[in-house]
Image (tube, rainbow, N blue to C red; front, side, top):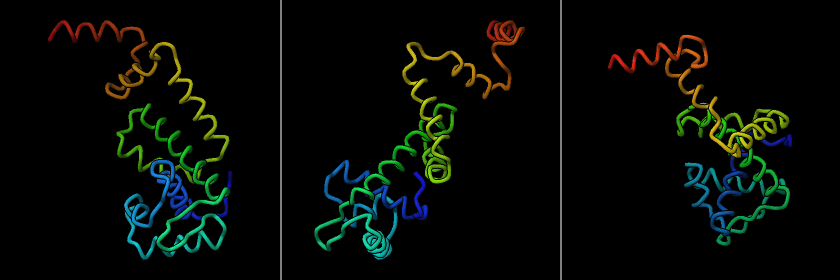
Length: 162
């Protein structure tokens, strides 16, 4: 999915989608809270998105996504979740992973996101915790591959010396 929308507009559609899934009714104040943006800016963007056919806005009644707006919001949310999960797997702290997923979700090719999603699904559905994830964590901490010859002996010596 490649839309002609700005990142900001996509963020709004994603936020509205998430709120609608959680609460059903989406109010301007909910969007303000979700995006940490003041009401006048939110109302201005909502009006633009309504004019473009992505949502329906009636003052005092809330915001509803059109089918096209909902599809874009769902896709952006799915991209965010996929990239966030991947970044967490490789050891990025949660807050940073969330912030980076917000940036990356708009730029990656759909095929790239699909492959990342397949990798995340593969890892999550592995019958046993993949040993390579533990090895990667060790590599990140020590800068050495735990599978290399001599590493295990070095590790054992360090644990017996303590």
